[in-house]
Length: 285
Ligand code: COA
Ligand code: MG
Image (cartoon, rainbow, N blue to C red):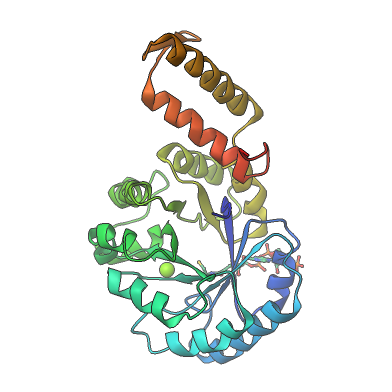
């Protein structure tokens, strides 16, 4: 699976922002057709995105298009406009049940186009189990706190306890089905301290990446979702010692003052996988 430490959103009708986005070295560029675009500008946005997909050099950034939700009456025309230009992935917002993902997977003929599911409604949260298992075209579950808060009648706070159940449920269901989990965005793009705190919490919870809405957020997010040299070195040492201990027949052992058994080894292996995905260390042969 491609690394998706940061996915940068931009309105699909704003070619200038798309051009700026592709120069940032961000893992994924999300050209939006949904809420970032006014109703009367949808046709303009479809044409702009199709042109960008056809003509612009995205480098190593993934080319993602967010279409309008199923049932909006806009989704088919969105797909008709962008699929001929072969985006890497389609991001589907307001996914509420497995049928939404299945419809999209069937409608996209090209099997190389991946699907990313945005979970941002109460129904989406309670149906996570069937959504996560809906299709082998699905790569990631993305958590959207702003829409969810509106849907459940919660007030957003910086600490985020009002959406904590859903945030945690998204990570858990993604892990259960071998999917990536991508965390919600921070709307105050001038508050770097708040972004750092929120991104760190997301990483601790198990998310492998986070949404962004402004170029200023990209480097901060990508750094937080990349294991540090120290974390990588510690994970490598741990795995090595574990192999020696296994050879000697011991399950649990002490390492740098802590009890180590199977869960700690799995966590260390995940650090290695993330470091490989970020290109910091080579992949296993
Ligand atoms: N992607 C790419 N470039 C962006 C960008 C984005 N998301 N947000 C801002 N920029 C660019 C601006 O065009 C500007 O470029 P310039 O210096 O070449 O003129 C530069 O970054 C600085 O932008 P700034 O002036 O700080 O912000 P703004 O007032 O132009 O825009 C927003 C603020 C919120 C409108 C803008 O960040 C944005 O459109 N974000 C994404 C919104 C979206 O897609 N929402 C739907 C998904 S939640
Ligand atoms: Mg939304």
